[in-house]
Image (cartoon, rainbow over all chains, first blue to last red):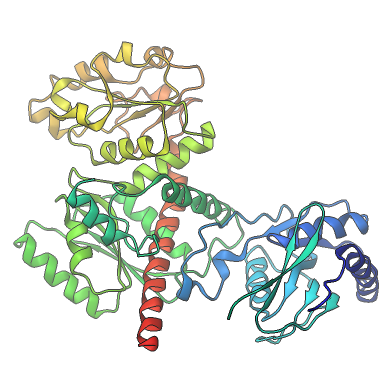
Length: 169
Length: 337
């Protein structure tokens, strides 16, 4: 049985790493974009911690998923919202759990349909490995390895906590 | 539900309850209608982006099969398909030349040979899209763009989206549909949608000659006098008056019709002050609606057009998704066997 980390601690870690990464890249005016739903909660937290005043972006990647041809359309789709001009901006893309990398690919495709950003930095709360695409995070709360039947989910928005689920497969 | 309804339901829904065709609103429950409206809301946002396209139907071919001409409906379906990244073929087919049954089957065989994935069908005969959905190759989705006097489900759903945008709900709303109810496929679909979504009252306002004989069976309130009928309305939907109905002696004259059933500023003033005015278009100014009302602050007629694109994107992507999920399930089942 794995011990799930405390989200508050991970956020502290992410905040420190994100400050470093932004400084190293010379990014002074980033905008945060969270992937629904967990990524949006984290983006709200990090936006506050970094003292950013700008509005947050929220992405629902349902229209960009590569499994549409197998599963059909997600009936719970909500409108995406990027309430700023993405053209030429430095974007911090935030998600809760990184695995195959397919969600991040879909999110980047969607962001480019709003305009061409100057750069995208990827920050995730947990990296579970098992990548299927060449995508790596710039900022990671924690790398965790899990058994094939285990899934982790972020619950929120307040308080934020991680939940472990085991499937029967 | 009648046996006919049950067979239509199993035709247009997958075992999982996803859409795979969109033929009629009959048999679709409130949850599914709400899903369609919610999905359309997300597509409205896509229409406001720098690149107004999503990749859902990339590599798919959509054929607009119009046996009856309609500029607006066809162009919004075309735009919807293109915004979903599909390739679009527009075919306007005049049915009068050949025997209808034969030409329909032949046309379909030819189009299927071109590996089409979806047919958007408009036909003057009620039931034509249903007939096509029954006979088409599995995996091809059929969308009804209006058939005879039967149904025009995408028009009704874009009207529902417009009402929800402006009123925020359906519960408690009093909605009237005014004009030629008898010949209107739009009215039939609207009545069905409003009732399923929980409107408090659906009222039809028309002369007796333009009402179906069994109008009470539709579950609406009937009002012959528009001055009385406008009372307490939250939404008034005007229908287009087909000029040929005048020739059919169902109406005295355009001027007389306007006097009795045209939406003037005076008549609109009898409704709630925030009553919205809708019309499926194209409008006959001065016949069913006064220009000042059509262009006035309570008119949402142009919102209806914009919403038409989003609703069509929603049903097209949902039906195509249902077809693909179906195919995927079947191939998994074959593997298990």
